[in-house]
Image 1: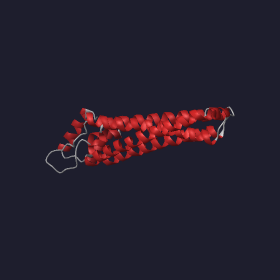
Image 2: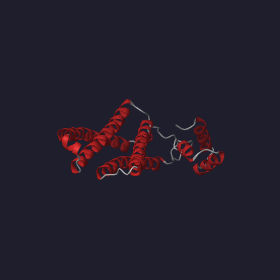
Image 3: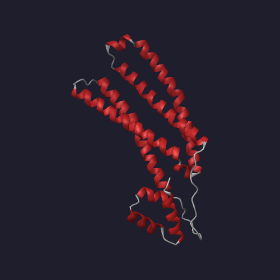
Length: 213
């Protein structure tokens, strides 16, 4: 949400026939950040008219909140059970004595992880597809507050997982306790968390390029 003083100034400057480049330069000299300036200018469309024409602003509806919470919720569930399933595959590929004794438990866990993925991942795809169609019809939805908050939260969770994964790897490396099983599990976590972080980082940049005035 842009500062009210900023949007008031931008509107007055555009009313006085100042160009957006001139407005951007003046605000930059006054100490406003690039992000604040872009947000303020984004309130007004590039339409030739007697007065500045405001852009429609995204609003948060209960329906939007439902679809975004469903999408990100099923994303977290899918990521967790994908890691869990791959861990069990690694345990079967490189079994130890304890794993042999718990073979029935591992098999049951694989079934549970598979069932969770069969339900959660298609639900994630459906929710993501619905949101993509809504955004295609109305690009201002890219500026939705809940979209940005949940995206940044997801990136924060992914970054925290990556940091924890790295710490665990270094800890075991310093203790001389690296095994093939352990390294593969570290790589699984890094791949899943890294993919999530990379994709949503790219998505935020795509939103910024689309919304840039």
